[in-house]
Figure 1: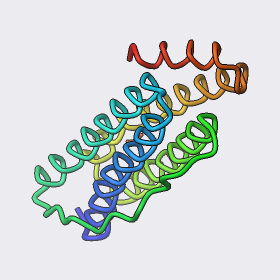
Figure 2: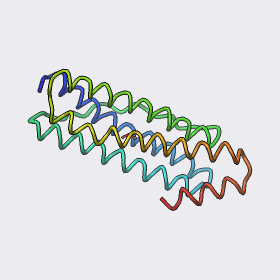
Figure 3: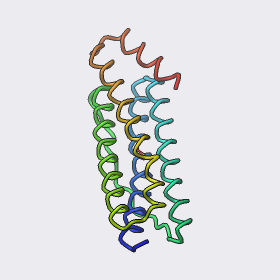
Figure 4: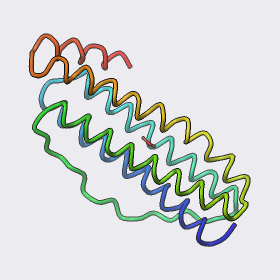
Length: 160
Ligand code: FEO
């Protein structure tokens, strides 16, 4: 595996860690607004991001690479609505999907077939994550700022 591909995998390890941190910031906002179910959903999402990061961590080590930690930038901490939280989440997931596709392209160019195979899981996962955020956005657009509707969505997300 080339240094270029190893670096790209290491960058993605760090981006997954950053994703977890972003979701914790969103969870903390929802918590402060007493939307416990949404906060729970987002904390679970953060945990998933750390699991994604560890998949990259293990794979890089399996390929005799060295994982290096990078600085994590400050995430967006303040939101004007719950809808904005999940719209931001969807935009973030689209960015992740683009990065996974770029990695896959690079791995294919280098004929690094273990990496191509490793990334397949993320292709499916990204489709699922984008769809999950789209579904929540659809529901939040439907209820707007109506309290009862918001509470219903909150209860649903709390059961994740
Ligand atoms: Fe690890 Fe939500 O992408």
